[in-house]
Amino acid sequence: MEQLALTRESREDTDLLLRCKNGDRDAMRDLYSRHQRRVFSVAMNYFGGNRDLAEDITQKVFLKLLTGINFQGRSEFTTWLYRITVNTCTDEARKMSKFGELKEFFGFGGDAVQQLMTETGEISEKVQHEIAKLKPKYRMPIVLKYSEDLSYKEIADVLGCSIGTVSSRLNRGHKMLSTRLEYLRGAL
Image (tube, rainbow, N blue to C red):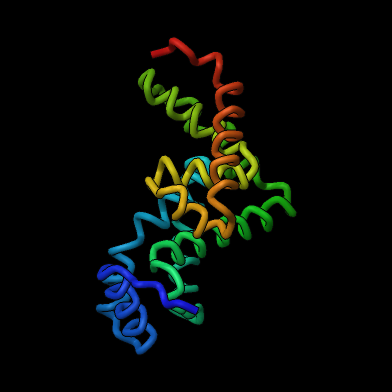
């Protein structure tokens, strides 16, 4: 099997991860600093803007990185990291749905709804809310494309599917969002 030619950044990340596993605290801080925003952003979007849950997911992902998951170098480090993040979010959503708590984490109700927001903020929140209601197979390509600015190829690698599947899921997700958000047309 042909070995992937990794970027300089991915090689640096691999080196940091190895140093972390050997107990280097500076390497742990560096790895966290470099990638915390990516993990947090995916989790925030996955769970409809729930900051507490996104912070929990971020901690879980970095614990996994430091305590037993081994990067094999078959993909870019960030692709691998996104995959771990998506899997962790999916696992957490599955656990929550068993206990009927999912609605709470998608931000329905509560004090945040009562706060005055700018018109753009309200629209943004409504869009984020509708994205959060999509099935994960449609939600994750949208989050990875628009929040993380990944290419179709990178999304396919993260989700473990073909580029055609990514394209199809994005198209279907766009159509669902367009239908659900039709009432917002002309609001800006």
